[in-house]
Length: 418
Image 1: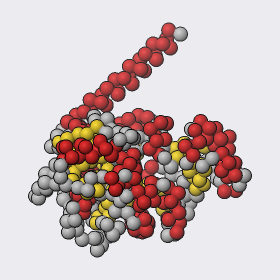
Image 2: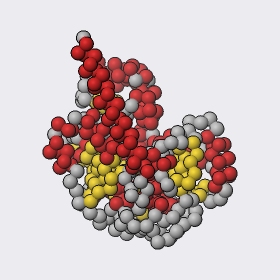
Image 3: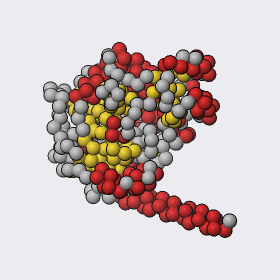
Image 4: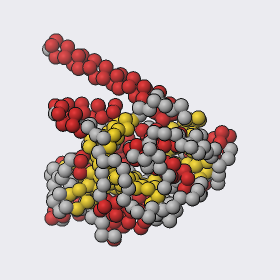
């Protein structure tokens, strides 16, 4: 297994470039892992201005929205003009890029070595109905879930009230589009009236509604297996973390700590092997204290937001993807249990500050401080070798705080005038 201590630069330099599709924290975490090996890095960004595009290691930036009607044509033109040879492609933090690249896999330049499968395999991860079905076949616990594609399905489901136990989580299988439009990945309903109201308000969840039991417990009940698999779906590395905080409910994590669970690892690897997945995968479970089971929630088939957490613990997941794509000799793990420090934290500090304010966690200052005590840290996106993304994040945070305070002052003045 290729690993390093998360700080030093690699001894071996590589000339084959990497193209990272995505431009936010997940992409920047991948840049952390790849840059130490001298790998040329290029970024494809929907806006051309995301955080990862500001890294000094980002040599070229292509602005290309994954929804562009001529996505593959424009990508091929750029690849031929600016890359012109073999390169490794990986997707970081953006499901839309994963979808379009997997669906158009056969149309990509033959010199582009992908770190993800084609759509036939990727859809088993992206379409949760497929994922849950395979999990059940393997005896892996999942939350009780009902699939709703139209109002007739909903009426039929409501006619079987015994299968529901409120509160229920309502989310769309098209989570990326739902998040982009509504600013959340799901909503909760406490009764039938709220369920019907939400169904209408959120446009029927695009005909892809997952009606799911709410497993009790907070963020710390969520465990995540992160792994890189070879083409035989054998793990090259495994890493487990536990969520501490998110920016808001059902949203991206802002603070995680190292953890371990044999069940999480065993279930996750068995499911990925059944799917036949290769490359990076992140499998999330929630511990249900009612029956003492870990229940599989979802799989992300692209590099996740806090992938640099593993890097801090000596497991360089992006480099493993790179090496496997180029057919470098990488032995599968013989012993699954990985040794890495306990209570090591990954902290996306600007997002977490917003989270603390939004969720009013500052009202519990002792708990806030205690949550940040650990044996080791990686603070995203602070990196003294590549300082600009961190500086930019601080500037944006200050601007956000200023606008928030200004809004409060303006609101206060308006109330006094009344």
